[in-house]
Length: 196
Image (tube, rainbow, N blue to C red):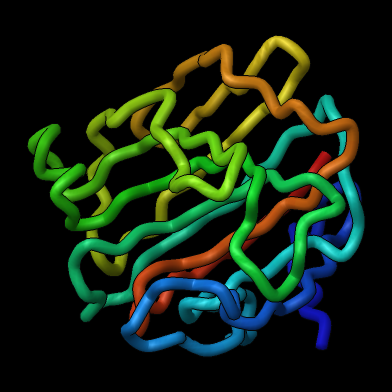
């Protein structure tokens, strides 16, 4: 089933495919549920969504996100850029991942309720942090804005808490955009998503 969500005034609508929980995941807890639409928001419930169409550089991604009240600790919001040959039913082997870590040991290490990080996944080994953590206040029930510019010289990330240019590059000619909210039973709301 496809979810259409995007910015009404944006350049093009975004169509999302719901993905099953990865069959090769080592996670023993709740597998969450597929994303749903509530009003004008896509609600991420522990399983990924992926754009139906492929993208390429340069591009800009804009959206608002919120973790709903009552979220368990040690979760996060993940925005992933994965090559077009990525499986739909298994863990990604390659990806560039922008992460908002929520109420985690990583966030605590920078004295904040949240932390912003960028990970690279390029093998079956766990993803490795290549930038961050940087303090990012992430409180339940508050919306935050993320603006990301992906260019050949790296990523520029602008949030309502600051801006940074990092030289981590998306190395794929064409890629999918994938999102997830972690960990179940967290509810992560995404609004006004646009790609241009």
